[in-house]
Length: 159
Image 1 (cartoon, one colour):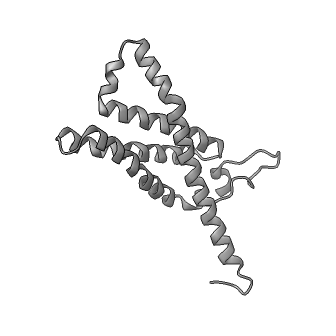
Image 2 (image 1 turned 90 degrees about the vertical axis):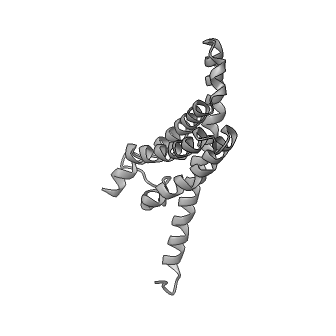
Image 3 (image 1 turned 90 degrees about the horizontal axis):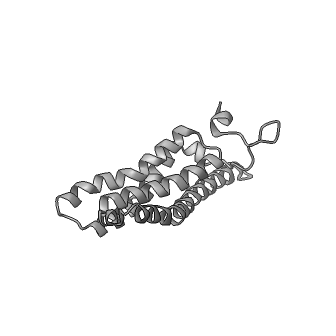
């Protein structure tokens, strides 16, 4: 219900802005994780003489999901999210690929299609996980500090 001043509507708009900002921050952290860790995986495989493993689409998918999950997890932890939230978001990173392995193995889609579709499907999976904890993701994490000036974790704020 909107008051004459419009305060509740503005608060709801702000919470959706925070929610959206969290979403895009996590996507950016995923891209950073992929860009930073991808070359490390490639170099490691080359040094071990296992460069041929890059020809296995399933392995490429899992490595890329891992790189993105590491980047996103580090950022979420930095922003004060708890391990349960980070774990749920990590699952959302892998599920699209795991679901697409079946059609790939059955020859219904190519490796490239599986990789592309898995990356695209991550985005709505992440969104659904965020909706599950909407209150946590809609908070402005910059404002939450404890009495010593340290940022509190969402679990500490919600308790």
